[in-house]
Structures are given as structure tokens and as C-alpha cells.
Image (cartoon, rainbow, N blue to C red; front, side, top):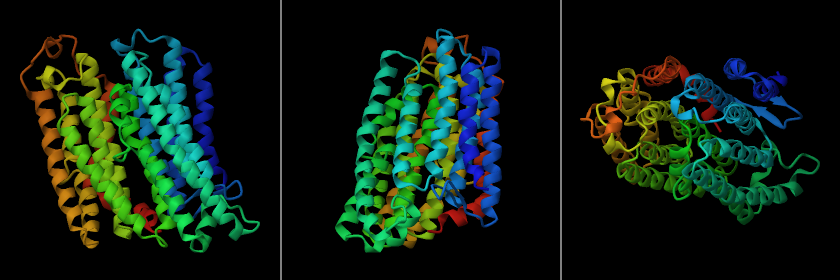
Length: 484
């Protein structure tokens, strides 16, 4: 079993090399095969963990418990779906000017990015957790800047600069934590989180608290929590649609996984950290929703709503309870599926119409009926309508807040959910059912999304209904993952 997580990390790297050296006609097949094999391995790994096993590798440097297995499956599924979507996306007319070299680089870097994401959620080393998170930034920065125009390069530069500067505070937190824990561990490795947890109560209170706050700031910046969110709208809006889906669907969730690991380490001794995370989460959901409400750019609207939705996840973690952690993880699954679907549907509309401006669009449903249905499914899920994944995940988080008697947070969470439903349905109506307002919307070249794109969106929609109607299917893994 110890070789299973190693294999899961090696597979994307192996196929990245194969994609790099393969001929043009073979690359899409290898791209799909690499992400598909990783998905099968992640499912098998999850099955083994559900049997009560904790998989260790490389002398406990790698640790796969229920939380890691859950995140690895989510990464593998989203990567596979995005790979399906990209087989048609990379042949769209607006990418014809892209050189063969850049298209090859896109697929190769995407697989490298998948490797760094797996590495992040399966390492047991606090410093390597930071290194792996920084590696995800480096791997994805070039993908964000893929179009190589002025706006894309500016977005990539801001993405790289802000995240690198922000997450540097997490490095300081790692160093401080190691220095404080090492004297109490003797010959035991002082960088392993499982070892640090055994001596956390022995650390000087002020050192441990400063270390925890530095780690939360660094990982919170990577997650896009307000007020560390300024990189989110530019990166999500200017990146290719496939990259927008993976950014919002999984990349900003992985640092939330890191925050949950930090909470599991420190929260028993420092419950005040929960109040801090709860406050940041509530502030993020409120600010993100208000900014999304004001947007006329479709992709920027979806980007700001990501900042709002990860606020729900942070709020659930801030409760520091089984129900809060459970709701946070359920909302991670919901938002990964829902936001990836919305970006895929909205992104193909923007590509076909050659504009992201909502006022310039209208009547798109007449030419793209299936895409409009998928966008509506995502919109209803994002707004928390019953039978969709957003309803059950938001309800769980709100119940956790109610259980903690955080009444102000409950009111804000419910209000933000209603506001989200209002602005996302308004955007849907204006883009897909409103009267055409410009030549872009009347463009005769606008047609239904290609079959691979529709298949990818159908898989995400199926996941949304599965979580919304049959959330109990996730209970075995979420139950294990939510326990400290």
C-alpha cells in the first residue's frame, strides 16, 4: 500500500513527459489517459482508506488518511473532467493562433500541476506542504498567462507575485514551528505533522500562536480568502476556461485543506484561532458576494463569487466542531463541481461570442440550449436551491454555525446565499434569455459547445445532483475526514 500514493503522484509526471515528446495527434489521447489512470488510482486509494487504513510511505513523509484520500479523489476527478473538456477547447477558433509548442506546453504543465496538487494533499511534512503549495503556484502561473496578451500577462504576474509574497508568511510559520517543536521531539523528525501534534501543548504559547497565524495568513492568501483575494478576479478571468475551472474548482481548495490540517494541529490548544477563521470566512462571503453583484464581466462575477463561497468553507472550519468540519468538506465538494461547471459553460459562451461582458450578450440559449441548461444547473446549485449540492452543503455549515450560537454569522450566511441566487440568476437571464444586445450575441458563428465539452459539463452536473440528492453516498469518507 505504501507505493499507492507514490504511484498516484508519479503517473501525472510520467504522462507529462510522454505528452511533451509525443506527436500532435497522440497528445490528446495521452492527456486523457494520464488523468484517467490517476482517477482510477485515487478511487482505489479511497477504497483502501475506507477499510480503516492509513497509508504511510517514505518513512511517514507521505500520509494518506481519509482527508487526504477525499482531496486526492476530488483533484483526480476534476483533472479528468477538465482534460475531456480541453480536447475540444484547445481546437477552438480563438486558439488557432496559438503555436503547437504552446498547446503542448499547456497539456504538459497541466499534468505537472496535477502532480503538485497530489503532493500537497498527501505530504506529512509541514515544510514540504509549503513547498508543494508553492509548486502549484509556479506550475499554474504559465497556464494563467497562456494567451500571452497584455491582460493575461498582467494577471499571471499578479497571480505569481501576490501568492508568492503572501505564502512566504507560511514559510516563516513553518520555520518557527519547527524551531519550537524540535527540542521536544529528540530524534523524531520535527517536521512531520503527526509528530508535531503530539507535542503541541508543550510549545511556548506565544510562539505557537504566532506560528499558527503566519500559516493561516499564507494559506489564506493562496485560498483567496478576503482580504487576501485581489489576485482572484484577474487570474480567473484572464486564464483559459479550462484553467479557470481548475483554479476555482480545486486549486483554491487545496490551501483550505492545508488550513484544516493547521486547525487540527492548533485548535485544541488555541480555540481562539477558530474565532479568527470564522471572522475571515464571514467577511469573505459578504465582500465576495457584494463585489460579484456589481460585476458586468461574466468571468469576473464567477471569480468574485468564489471568494464568497470559500468563506462558507472557512466559517465551517472556524466552528471547530465535527459538524463544522463536515459541512466545510461537503461545501468543498459542492463548490468544486459547481464552479467548474459554471466556468466551463460561461467560458465557452465568452469564447464563442468573443466577449465576457454581460450587457453585450443576450439570447444565447437559442443557439446553445444544452450549455444554457448546464449553466442553469450550476446557478441553482451555487444559489443553494434544494435538490442541488449547494443546498445540503450550505445547510450543514449553517447548522454548525447555529450549533455554535454564532447568530450573526448565521444571518450573514443566509443573506449571502439569497444574494448569490439573485445575482447568478440575473446573469443567467441576461446572458441566455435576454434580448440580443450586440453583434457579438447575434454572431452566426455562435453554436452549441462541441461534444467533449458537453460530456465534461454533464459529468459535473451529475456530480452536483449526486451530492444534492444522495449526499449520504459521501458520508463514509466525510465522516472519517471530519474527525480530528
